[in-house]
Structures are given as C-alpha cells and as structure tokens.
Length: 203
Image (cartoon, rainbow, N blue to C red):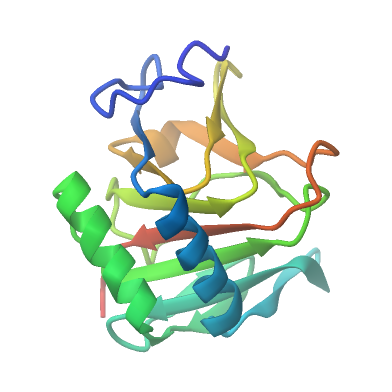
C-alpha cells in the first residue's frame, strides 16, 4: 500500500504494526540539498561494496562508505568495515538529524546509487554490532526513489517515495519484523546518495 507515500507528518507511523517508521519529508531547502549532494559525491571515500555469498566474493556497482566516532568495526554480508573519521559535512548532517529526531548516533553507512538501475535487495539492519531496536536515521539526496517495506511473516508491504533532502527514521522493532529494499527503476538515471545514521554498541 502507498497510503503514506506523500505524507510528511513526522508523527505518523508508516507501518501498520510491529515497528515504527516516521517520514519527515524534505528537511532541507533545494539549494542546501543540492550543496550537500555535491559535497557528498566529491568528499566521501567511496568504494564498491563487497559481499561474500555462498563463499563467493561479490563486488557491487553500488558504492559505500562507513564513518563514525571511532574506527568501529561493522560486519554485514560477511565483510567487516572499519569506520573512517567524520567529515565536516557528515558532522553537520548528524547534528541536524539528532536535533530533528531527539536521537543520538555514533556512525553512518553511506550508499551511492549511480543510476536507477542500482538498488538494494530485501534485508533488515539487525546485525549484532547495532544497538538492538535502536533508531536508524536515513537521509536521502539526489534522485527520488521508491523505498519498500515487507513484513517477514505476513508479507504485507508499505511503500514510500524518498525525496531529495528528506529524512526517514526506522526504530523500535522494525528491523525484527520488517524487511526493506530500494527497488531498481528505469524512471531515473540520476544518482542518489543515502546516509543511514546508526548506533554501534559493544566497543
């Protein structure tokens, strides 16, 4: 369903049950969003993502970067990454979404999708390195893309369109009960940068 796809009431829960997802809509002016997109494209140490699947190393077209308060180790898809020190722009963005949401974060995983052909398969962010039921603040810059949720038991789906300069927050038991993905699309050939601010524990 897409009942919430254009709602920007941050108090509205996009999920019908078993989790909390709030969409804040655009929290930046078009000018500011464009400036941050340009800075992120040019100042982040982007690298092709890697995953070990059935013992085989897969290298994606999508690029990623991992930053944090400390050189946190973060393992997903059987690959461990070491966090880089924050850039000035990332610290600014972290402070902004912490103010917006009342949450705190100590790390950020960034994804660069060069065109609409690049996406992300169904998954949940429930790695042992992450704070259980902790908030994940997701900032989007660039191409507007559809973002989908699917309940792990019922297969019910919820979809929302993430706009340029927008903020979405997933928290509570969302990662336990729901999968999410960024489906590929032929509707855009523009890049999208997504920043997911997180809390690493156990360090």
